[in-house]
Image (cartoon, rainbow, N blue to C red):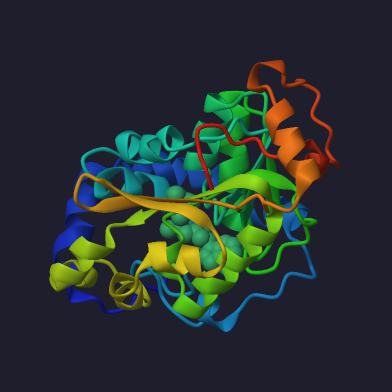
Length: 305
Ligand SMILES: C[S@@+](CC[C@H](N)C(=O)[O-])C[C@H]1O[C@@H](n2cnc3c(N)ncnc32)[C@H](O)[C@@H]1O
């Protein structure tokens, strides 16, 4: 794997991570999978890789996520960088879900750690993980299979998915937005708005913008080409700007944050309003109608958008 010169990574973090992780175990795991064959199965030939994605190095790895080593090394490293604990941080997103979701889309799902937790928390929901890297999806799929979780994995660009309008009642993104330029962030938020049913919720878990902005040296720890742009921004304002209401930011310890927004139900949409009133979370049919969430109205309860 070609590694870019990054003194902080090479002199400090890489030796520390090497000491902590069982490299031999992960090498055996990497060798146990035919990455090209498995990624070809998931790869969608019509997906165009944007230049911001493959022209940059991420975390010191040249070519970013478009190689199997990125997919294998992601989990062992991430477990040590999410403070105070990876599960606690990811659970903050799960705890912020205010809808009773029947169909969930996890954008930039990577190796699927949050996606798996979503499926465990909402077993009745259809859960789809979408990512630009087929290698990350191979790893995600393998994790789901081992955990006995039925999740669909989709190769695609979160800026422009092929799902129809109003297909989901929960759209999530964890640790995605600090890795993309702000114009891409806006495009993904617009796409999320389109994909959500009225009353549906967006949840974004990522680095804490206040902290990253104040402690600029944190942005040098990993090679993250867009993290300063992310730290200087205001995700809550961006989420509001594309039309979401009830936008909230919750700090998760001091290093992460969860942002939430709700797609408003138009006050003139009498049908949607009626369906919201009829909606009873306890009576959800476990056989989800794959085509008609829009007709079902809002799954939201406890939120006035
Ligand atoms: C830091 S990882 C986060 C992975 C996972 N969500 C997690 O919480 O561990 C960022 C992921 O976003 C994916 N990604 C970046 N830009 C994307 C885009 N435009 N569409 C879909 N996935 C994207 C990358 O391939 C990578 O897997």
